[in-house]
Image 1 (cartoon, rainbow, N blue to C red):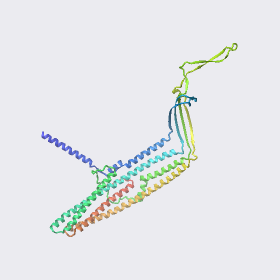
Image 2: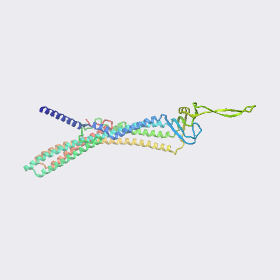
Image 3: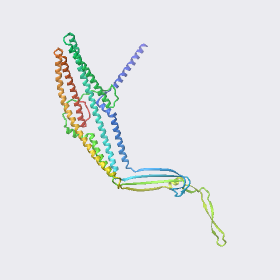
Image 4: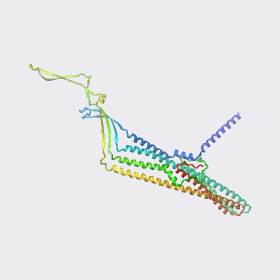
Length: 483
């Protein structure tokens, strides 16, 4: 029995361990750059808001198309008239309370309105395309920002490795100097100096850890991910730091960008939209021709008819005398009973139809149309200026990115040579320091120079990768930092 309990406990324990391992594995997802970009594009509120704008523009475009159809409206009334009034269906005075109903159906169709409706449809269609390009601009900007912060994490992670490695070197030196001080072969001042450097290295590690944590936090906030300490990014094999063999000139990159960048496409479409607005404003000067038709009927409680189900009385009246004897002659006329006409009979009998055309010619309306046309012309000029500004900003951004990439490449090559030289120098310095031929001050100075050179090399490396990524971005290539 005890054996069975032991085995059951062992199985339960293993299942619990496997559950914890699975939970930990799920929690510690490794985020690639593509994962971060896709998550941001799915959850970013600016993107969601622009998607709603696109959908609203689609609805507006559909409504402008449906606006070409004739309208159709129905009206129904139910009225009680008290006191003396003229009934519209009997054209007689009614002095009692009378209930009446009126039913109307009307339809109107605009036959011509200066092409304003057609121009509105075209303008709304262009607006959909422009808003889609605006959505692409937001997506591209967010993707580029995610790549930048992703590289910041990688940079700070490597800087942290450098800082820790240098601290370990200093810690080893502290151990060696302490032994030499204890043996009396080194002055206590050397130990104090190297311990001070160790404290400085600890501070550098802490500072770099804080930068890494902040960059992790910033990226999570950028992609709208709930902040968690389990956020871990992939450390990819980065693209090599060298000038591409097919590197284009800034003019060539700009020429390609003009044909592909969504911000340029959007600005061009907004020029066309402003031109359509101008055409719509000018169309308001044109006559408007509409056609309309109505059908109506009604019911009145004052409308009467002879009641065939009631007896007919007669009333005699004197019409003359018989010639000769003078006897009076009488005739009689019938007296009928009346009833209110039925609802169905009145509805079918009181119907009326109409069909007509209306031509409205604008003559003077307080100069409103002329003012609207003048404002539309200004909007065209503004849209054209905005397009030119977008082109100039794009050219400046490409020229700046090109110059930055070239400068960072030169800086990387220079920093590489500097690191090589500093590593040789530090190796020589460390050997002399180990045998007591150099002071701790000289050792610390050499180590600081090496740390600085390595940090500058890392910064130049990631700066070039990011700047070259921007150039690829302007050429319409997918954002990628992998080799």
